[in-house]
Length: 107
Image 1 (cartoon, rainbow, N blue to C red):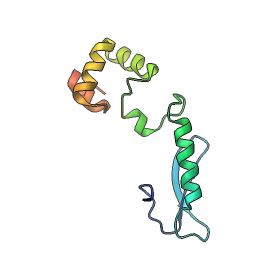
Image 2 (cartoon, rainbow, N blue to C red):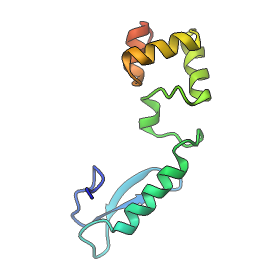
Image 3 (tube, rainbow, N blue to C red):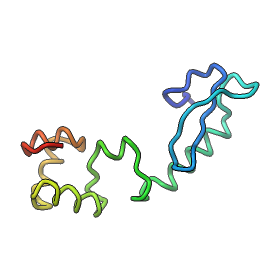
Image 4 (cartoon, helix red, strand yellow):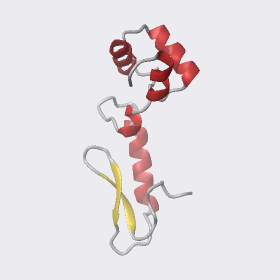
């Protein structure tokens, strides 16, 4: 299994802070993150993946049509219908910047 991106393996370990943000830090006596740490992160990420209260940078860059709060936000922000948003996401992909370009709106 590959290490998560951003970890060089040189005395670093994966750490999840209280806000749910993962980062790397110097490990004490270890040359790479432990499998247990990575597995804990993976399990945590699956558990909070659909929690609308936990938003990271990746979540802000994409539009998820399965999440009602996201559909409501983007339709209100851009003054469009759900159908227009759905059509734009299908044609441009889920990245906010691409959808905004397709709709000729600011991201």
